[in-house]
Amino acid sequence: MTSHLFSTSTNGETHPLTWRLREDRGYVDLAEFQQKDGYEAVRITLRDLSPDDLIENMKTANLRGRGGGGFSAGVKWSLTARGDDHPRGYIVCNADEMEPGTFKDRMLMEEIPHLLIEGMILAGYANNARMGYIFLRGEYVLAAERIERALSEAREAGILGSKVCGSDFDFDIFLHTGAGRYICGEETALINSLEGRRANPRSKPPFPGQSGAWGKPTVVNNVETLCNVPAIALHGGEWYQALSGGRSDDGGTKIFGVSGRVKRPGLVELPMGVTGAELLDMAGGMRDGLELKTWLPGGGSTGFLLPEHLELPLEFGAIGKAGSRLGTGLMTVVAHNQSVVSLTRNLEEFFARESCGWCTPCRDGLPWSVKLLRAIERGEGEDGDIDMLISLAHDIGPGKTFCAHAPGAAMPLETAIKHFRHEFEAGIRHPAREAHAEPIPVGSV
Amino acid sequence: MTMDTPATGNTRASKASQGNLIASVGRTDDFELTDEERSEIEHEMGHYENPRAASIGALKIVQKRRGWISDGAVIAISDVLGIPSSDIEGVATFYSLIFRQPVGRHVILVCDSSSCFLTGHDELRDAISSELGINLGQTTGDDRFTMLPVCCLGACDRGPALMINEDLHGPVEPGDVSALLERYS
Image 1 (cartoon, rainbow over the protein chains, first blue to last red):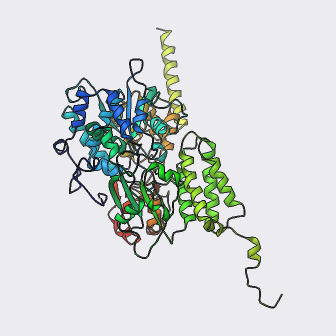
Image 2 (image 1 turned 120 degrees about the horizontal axis):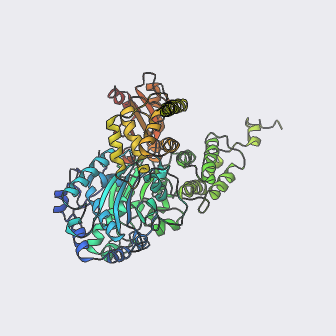
């Protein structure tokens, strides 16, 4: 079952991520990948470019992390401890796609895993890594099969292993499959999990670039981020940055998508800065009889936006200014007849369940918010509950915990109350009003 | 000679008492790894800087054949990896796809994240519940199915979605449930 694509293109200069996908949406094997310029970027880079050249290219490209964090991949790479004083470390691909509403990395890994492998080899070269790990969530069974197949094809062809493509660079990749838990997608929790520990995030600093997996310099990048690297290496950072020309300062294209009660949910590769309205249009709009009430721009840990925000460019800056986050860039749309209180309760239940339990504000605060939301949903909220929710959202916000799990949970909660406070108020029980629930007959007073 | 005999005897006695001690803390199911399991775990260890990193992989290797992780399995894995069984237990109880109690022959993972919630998760879950007579976290009396919630399955364009064993299904309407479950005997 492949995801629907709103539109496709075979132009590698405009659609660096998806131009090689097959019409039948099957697996792009090594032969076909190489016919379509596959591994050219590795060959040319290892021959002609230094790691620093590649990092400069990445910085110029302004490729911002596609896993939802939005941190510049080039800057991240430039901060990795490299050189004779440091051991060779690891490239870890974060393929633990579990952000509610996000289904883009699955497509890339199922259909074109060679693109990811090529990106990881380049990342390994730039960051002086000796090995790569793909940390794949356990439920992605087909992706695991396809990645293993691509890895063995690449090894047999001398693209992985000692002397990659005949160069002096040695690099291999190992597929590590997980065993559940959303928190594994947090980069330091992911490293702990890779090391065979409970996936509790680590305190930072040190950042993984200094001391990551087994204490070695480690770069953790999302699947889609790494899939962009080959084209940047081949065509240059300026070309990549200009792909979004005029629409956004964030470089390049991105896999956007739409889910929820729309006519045709799906994915599409478009330049950064496309609007939510354009995407919703491509998805055929809302299903018949439904109207758009609100939407999440990029997963469960982003803030609710209103229909009027559909005209904003989908890029990190503009969506941030509107009080949300671009996140993974896959919109979840919510219809007019959906209770925002119930949806917020669903989101907070998710975050409460998935908290690793290490930091008190997250471990205790999230279940508390669920308790209050359930009461409001049943119409049994008490006076002060809404203020308590707002105060909880503040107390689990940025800086209070090791990682961004709780702040991510706070964002939909805060924005739901900000935009739809009346729905929350409707769930507060008013003892005074209940006492007069029966209409008072006119003239009897 | 006369000195050696009691010493040997003592050693035997102390080994036996160690065995009893372990039995008293949980090795009650006479668990032994098969040669195949052991060699798969050892192969897994070679992919990382140290054996500990293979702990999740080892749990998955054992669970693939046994369906779940018993106390004996925790101890056996800790023996192979050379790390404390309490560490294996910590890992086994942390991850949602490692089962520390028996599950049915087929495990249903029902996605309850936002996109599936918006497209009918509650109705789907209720349809499965009434078809099988179990709630989330429970196993049918005939050990055929266990139903569990799961994080976003990355099938948001096909919500409401679920997985049965390694098969992804979606969208699954409440009316489809009966025929779908029939396929898993």
